[in-house]
Image (cartoon, rainbow, N blue to C red; front, side, top):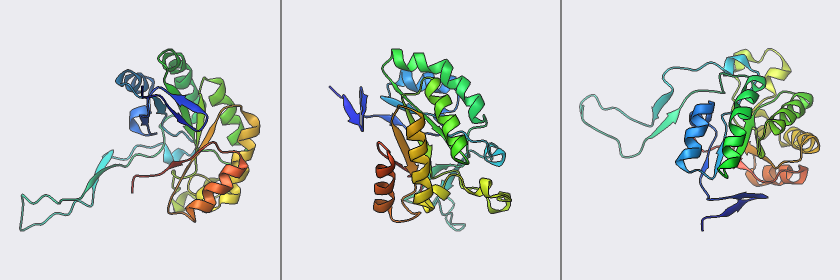
Length: 219
């Protein structure tokens, strides 16, 4: 019996697919369900246009040092790092993907976790209600990535997204509290362990109503 609990969620097994390229389309999500995951967290969606564009290549080698004098040298420690940003679909379009797969997940006892990044309390609330209405069993509030490029931050609403809520936990707590009032499903902020004091940040979000946390672990 691999049944486990993550906060108030009951999973058939402890395998959780993190938000990323593998959960960006309905077809991909169904394949992850068939693969046997206990929960699938969808790719983060946001309304920031510059974060919807796919860079090429989608993956890069991190810490892979080349040695010109040793053409066959392979470093001992390196990692694959996906470099795409948010979903190419904005949240109001991604909701259609959620509606398409929610019954498929539910019928196979897979917990569907919807991930998104909003700007402003009203947008967070509206998206939370839309995702919950589309069949998500829980929500991931992305307080980590996106990392808005400085040159794109022409307005405050463009800067106050993603990592800004880990860097400013009080503002993140306002979002958690607001979303908690808007929906009746568990909320899990995705937070950066390097943005500020991790323990204090987690406690602040817990007090605001978070059911748990998902750390950013790419780097």
